[in-house]
Length: 277
Image (tube, rainbow, N blue to C red):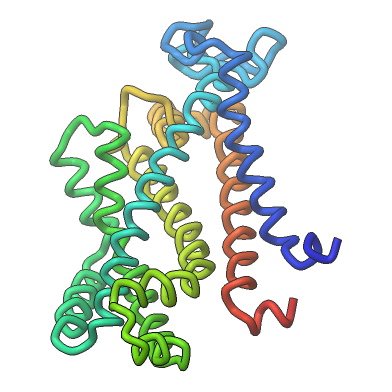
């Protein structure tokens, strides 16, 4: 019970995220994929016993569209977040531990890239590619998601590498790889986990934004694509609340869960926050 109270934010956030994931995974067992396709039902029908969340202008069942679209958005976020944090951690570890000219070059590159608006680059690249797959969208977002993790990890490594246990390991003849794997990474693990949750949140938000603009995968359902069609056919003006409100609720629950997870992991990584909690 003491552990549950100590990590209540992390547990609450993970519970919300798991519920959203289960909504997409378990729902596929109950709702067939054909219901999320064009012409599955009568267009623009309000919620009923046959269609619990109604249908959109093209006859898709909104519930089925969300069930099959939520995992797509989660997949993009997880792939982009993991790749972005992995690359950022590698660059940050290299810069912080090596120091000197290597640190200076990586730091300058990161500072330059951070001045470029990421959303503008994402829009330009996605529009140039035309048809974008889920994997391609994740790679595009990951390519612009590693700079902040790299900067944050570098700052942490600059502090950790001067601590006594790292100096003792160096004096005992431990190799640089052994110090990084055995001393730096274990101490960075909680911080990297919190960074990963934040990166996944940003990647999901970016994918939803691009898909809402019509620049995401158009052949697979996603939360952003649902917004795109709702905007295209004027769902708000036509008061078709069952079309745009449910994906908003899912996004709110998902981001609330990710935020709580990030705060819980921050308490683990930061002793001051942990003592206050």
